[in-house]
Image (cartoon, rainbow, N blue to C red; front, side, top):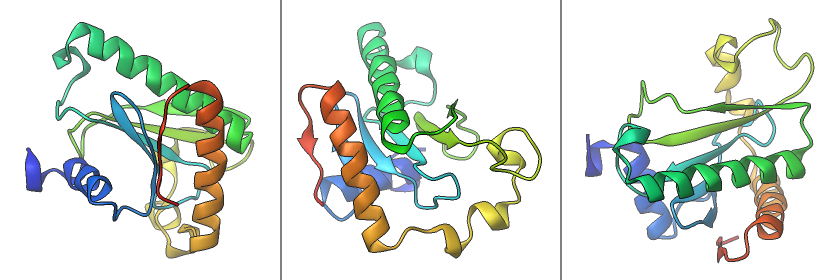
Length: 159
């Protein structure tokens, strides 16, 4: 699935058109965005610039850079949102375009201890956990500032 059919490609196109309100920063291999829903405060995604479905399809040097940048994004999420633990996920079952989910986790943040996907989807994707404009800007600034400390060159997000 490429182009207009791919949800991740659509999100990247919105970034390029400067209309994606969740965009934080552009790195060499991907785009950093705050998640649309924030049940897990600080939930962030790192979207690969290349439309591929598997890590092993990426050129070796690009793959290493992509994984290194993902690690820096995760470190920035950790520093910005002070979780007890981070969950890193690269699934691709719904949207096959390579993208990382980085979930800040806190003790007792779900009714049953386990992966985020065990949480009732109605809770996880509730309108109640969508950040308002102020909250979204605050999260983007925090994350952008932490990224700036870890990565020397960032293309500034529009916020």
